[in-house]
Length: 68
Image (tube, rainbow, N blue to C red; front, top):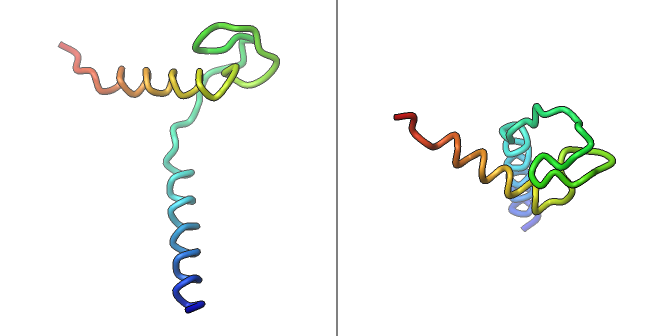
């Protein structure tokens, strides 16, 4: 039983490492404003996770649009 648990744990760790290695990199510089809603912020690029998620969705949609 512990062999199956060890294998499951190793697989989960591998999947996490792969996901982290393939996540999009933020290349934006700190501006003092949220990159999505432009609210003032003290650190980072977004004021909260919702703005980050919305901006990432927008960027993904833009990258999938065809240039006609």
